[in-house]
Image (cartoon, rainbow, N blue to C red; front, side):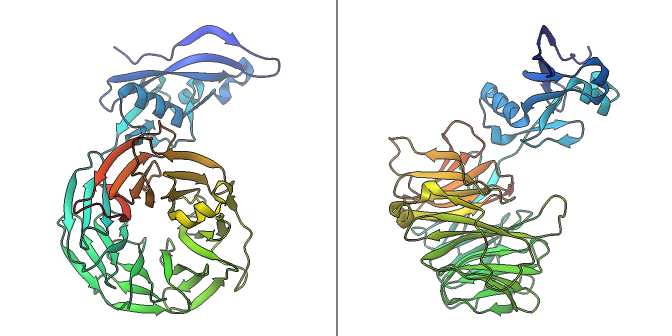
Length: 449
């Protein structure tokens, strides 16, 4: 029996000068062809004279994912939709009948969406009650997969390589370590910092290329991850380095400081290229690079500063070639609901999504975390604990690589995984650190295992 055609109802409406709106359904199938569901859509049917241009639906892929997740009793974070050979993004409109037949001549066998279920991700968590160990665990079940032992003191920074096969950890013992995620073996110990390694980052070029670390000794260092040798020491900050990132091609690094200063560096020479100075009581909470779709090799820098007096968290954005040293950037967005002395005092770490379009901020006194639009400053998602969960206090946070999920580490030793795409405000997975109730000090997402 052939594929079922989209069902079009006999009821159609049109306001003067607007397209006809009609109810249709589109089948969603597995890779094997089994019917999973038929999703009702709203489709704008153009006039007969313009039908060759195709029809469009007003339903987004995000809407379909959320509907499927509800009907299947799973999280939408684990679902992807494919049309033809293309994996659809959340902002895409579901293809219409005529549009599909234009793209796929064999219409009867292509007008449907294919549902993919993603495997769970590996996650990493460290706490100050774990004697310097790091837990690798499964995002699907919360089950611990590996315990990485070797640091002498608490681990404060974690980062997975782009392929998920390696993990970097930075510790209060002044070292960073490179781990094999499959075996749990410590491959390298990077020594040279004189204080806590508070931030770590991989070069996007690959797992065994370069790494950048930032420390409370006011310096950052660039390392070779094949030999473990320190290639360059980046000096110039006047206080602790709080965050680091490497550009997509690895040629530039950026460091953020407790005094609010952000510095650009050449990773080949160690020369400081540009510096964004801060005035007043500001801390750099996060730095990140993103690449525009039109120019994947380009680098766009985003960073967040927190004013410790007003509590305002402000997002800044610039391209890879700042105009001059000490350039005062216009704020891209101010997260206005964060403007209070209470929020300022208890604000935890923050994190950018991979595309730097969203910012995740946690608050460990008021029991919530929020996802913000980095352009407008609008609050997109408010993650708040239920009254019966007094230990939600968020301290460290991270986005998954696809931006669909977030990790929130609490002051009570728990790590909670939440949906970031508008699903019901409930914790999906809870992972409790072994070794007591110490606070979670760092969290990170890897790839599927």
